[in-house]
Image 1 (cartoon, one colour):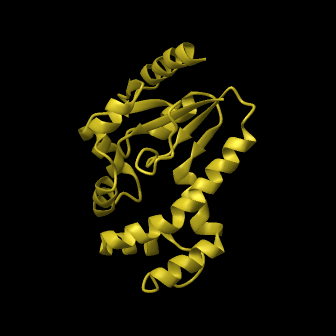
Image 2 (tube, helix red, strand yellow):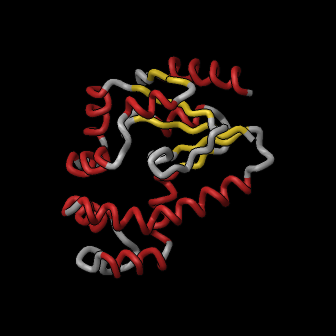
Length: 189
């Protein structure tokens, strides 16, 4: 099984690019949202570690955002609780898809959490910062403070780009991205 990991800046279009490959995608952001909504044991640990923010199950976005905005330490505490669950879900996903020719990993903190393997094909999604910010501001739930907190825990984009096997310049036009993905698929499969 070929593992293709899609990395890049927040809002650069990683999930969109990941889905273009046409293979099963592990979307960590989606899985995190599911954990907040359905995992009671995670919630209990969040409540125990951050009682000021988490009161009633399920954890809601407002509680999570408030905790993260108030302190960088809170983000670290949340991450310590959530990331082991993501690792478990990733493991289940990989077992379930082991007979597939390829899988796509859409995990924003893949390199930071050392979830990558040497044999992974890393695709860096490069987008203009001004374009990213413009697109993020259109999101209903965009929060600049939160964005800045998440940027702090990520490795520099220059490092991610250097570690990558392929670079897709995402100018947010469907055609260009599709052509880039086709080229990569032709090369690796």
